[in-house]
Amino acid sequence: MSGIEARFKGAFGGFNLDVAFSAPATGITGLFGPSGSGKTSVLRCLAGLSRVREGHLRADGAVWQDADQFLPPHKRAIGYVFQEPRLFSHLSVLGNLHYGLRRAKTHAPTHRIELEPVIDLMGIRNLLQRSPAALSGGERQRIAIGRALLSQPRVLLMDEPLSALDRQSRNEILPYLESLPAALSIPIIYVSHDLTEIERLASHLVLMREGRVLAAGPLAQLLTDLSLPLARLPEAATVLDLTVQSHDARYDISQCRLDGLPFFVPGRLGAPGALRRVRVRASDVSLITHAPGGSSVLNILPARILSSHPASPSQMLVLLNLSGGGETRLLSSITRKSWDALALRPGMDLFAQIKGMAMTSG
Amino acid sequence: MWQAISLTLQLATLTTLILLLFGVPLGWWLARSRSLMVEPVAALVALPVVLPPTVLGFYLLVAMGPNGPFAPLLQAFGLRTLAFSFEGLLIGSVIYSLPFMAQPVRTAFQSIGEAPLEAAATLRASPIDGFFSVAVPMARGGILSGAILSFAHTIGEFGVVLMIGGNIPGETKTLSISIFDAVETMQWGAAHALSAGMLVFAFVVILITMLIARRTGTPQP
Image (cartoon, rainbow over all chains, first blue to last red; front, side, top):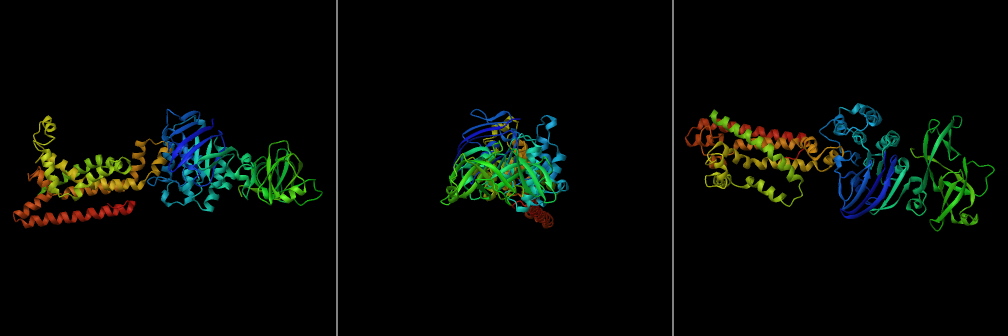
């Protein structure tokens, strides 16, 4: 099990690429940035489909590219999901799935990704004999993902696999993508310009801008970094990975836990022990200096102010650390008038009132 | 007459097989290479389309003759000349029909584009593997059209055959020459039979290639 270390530098079509980043050995690393920031170029360099003047790449415990060598794409143990499915029109769905499976080098048989489980995971059993031309966009993309998985990748590269699809097909595929990190212990690089997709799937983030890496690190850390553009977006939010504890059927509310602190989320989130990601918008978090006697807000948690940033003449963005003994951070957006009226300052202990929380998986 | 038909079919079959062997890789190269030589080579290959067959035949006759540039090579095989022989006719046919193979194949490979081949590479297919397992099957419509057109074109050629093959029964006397002969010697019945046969054959061939083009979505040549 090994992560990815990458550095690419050189002219790429019309613009200059100059990136260096690493990705952890497991989980999804989001490659996020506006269109034209070089995300797809980076992915193509990782796959060996494109080559820049200066490149260093270590993946799967080996050097794939450096000053002296360049491993061609067909010799890299990658799975690549393109923006469009790129299925082979002369083969049936099953023929497409077999294409990579047949050519894959078998690693330890215990880690082999078998045909049957992938067919079930992607829900494509009734499509196997069909021609790709006769399928919907969502079905085709599911087969493209299955085909990539069956090529026994040691690194999975996905280039906006949902961008060409309608909302319904997206919602059809997202649960499959969410289940991938648990099913595969390999690095997954996921390119997207859609922050909600990244918030839902990624555990790690590489932020790109104009061919460069703006920042890289754990998702929650980057979302709450006041010096980065993400926290300054009007829809700024952070994500919390909650552990489900119990469900109260009388009120249809789930009790969860994070850092020893209790959280209440409406609805049945999952079986006890399940990990669920929720999204908390900065504008849904308000601050009070004393614990309130009675409040209709369910989640009121002790917190400490870490830093602040004036986001606009009227708004103040506040970074909080939940006082549960952990590293969990929260963003709060309040008015500057309140900030001054309450005499708030970094280091102060107070309470964060979370008015709304939404599951990222909607 | 049957001798002429059999000879013509032999010539067309061999020509088509040779063209499949060389024309498909040539079409692939024309479709994918970024070399500056692509368009000059493509123009050279397309020459027989616009050149009078007699011009082509004349140069081939000179080239294959006892004083031509290939004479030393021929002598190594104990031959004095390839002119007025079946082998000479075959070489002439291959060159004359090459554009009818190379063009549709090139167009078909171009219309496939880079995308499926990149996908094949990410699925561990080497470039050669990708050529045979993805490019050729996806271009099969264009390859089939090219083969049928080359075959039909060889059956119908006249000028080149006359120039380099002459009129030797069983060796170089093909169908089109037979028709010419029949008319020259006032055998109208034979000329009618052969011409009508060729007419129907040509119609069927063109119809088949159009149907293939429609089914596989390959652009027509």
